[in-house]
Image (cartoon, rainbow, N blue to C red; front, side, top):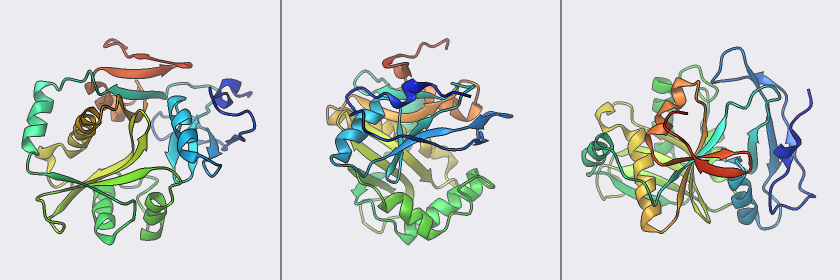
Length: 252
């Protein structure tokens, strides 16, 4: 099956950039579907500029690779980002912010620690048991965090201002010219009333707004996947429609 050639045409990116395509693997979101990914390496000169251009074209980063879905028979994965400057939290989201007002966000260098890894393992066991990352060792986690050719931060969320205050959540976040791209998040599932996953997105939106950055990139949204439904709660949400970002309508 021939792939859509527009997957390899990115505005502003030189033609000589090489793209590759993975073999088909079972889709983790839709039953009876197989996924393929187009990817390229970010190890060229000026990786931050390239990463920004690829992010605007719907790519995501994993270590030193930028990828996007390249499924010949399916286009369910849609790139989405929050309009941070126009965002207004709902009543429920305001309650989430209030419940977490004791947390302190601390940006640190993207260097894996054993403390973070223990929290990650707890999260994977309780939320993604049997998933593709459930058997991740510390070395693999260190690779995910440490191996970045672009501007990246780890945001640690602790219950108090001290460096050794209890760690309850972590976000691996790329810093783009036009906002934050949330690469991966994990948190303490023993505190469900905090809604920590929601809180980290709200905090990134608030942080982006304070810096005058217009967007928070949330990765891919799939309408048919209940796992992805939470992303539509952050309005206004923009979706990449072909080469153009537009506002996602409520009834979509």
